[in-house]
Image (tube, rainbow, N blue to C red; front, top):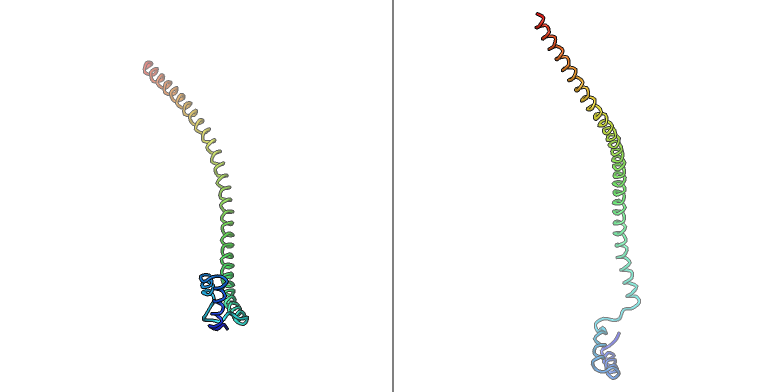
Length: 145
């Protein structure tokens, strides 16, 4: 423990070596109210910090447990998304097959329209011929009677 006398001696010597202003600056950094830390003080501080660190470790362990739970939830969500992706892929495959069927059906309809047009043309020519023949029969019957 330094006394006031020791501090004054130190200041006087510093003033001789360094000068008045630097000696004052250096002395202002030397504690006057408390003793310097002892080994016991440092050990006590270490123990107190250890206790605090244990508390922090406990909290960190709790945070780790929570993060593990969140990771598990994310894994479950990833699994569900993978299943949904699989289902969407199957639906895409089915839609592709349906689209192929629709293209083939459209091709058949194109042929159907052409055939219907041809049949209607034949029907019209036939009916025109039948009507002309019927008119000729009516006219001939009128002339003969």
